[in-house]
Image (cartoon, rainbow, N blue to C red; front, side, top):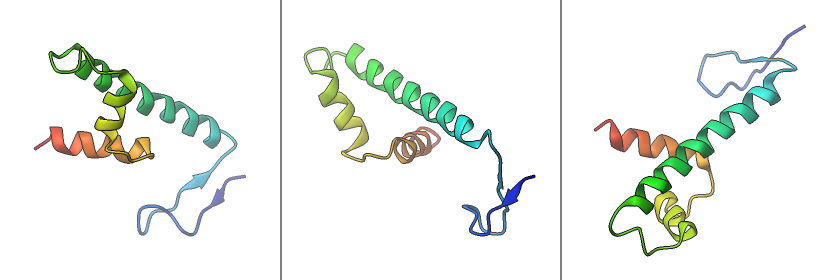
Length: 81
């Protein structure tokens, strides 16, 4: 049986809760982290990034934001302009 969440993220959209949801979230989280790692690798491969530690490049990329999903969405939004 699927339960419906009343406070859905998207207004007017019911999100079904399932036993697989935690697994799906973990999978998506891994994909987001891999996306950010790829962006850090791109920066590291650049002329300016070669001498910088990876942690510093990641901090610069995320602008100190600790939400990887929000960071990825911001990067994608900037790239689509």
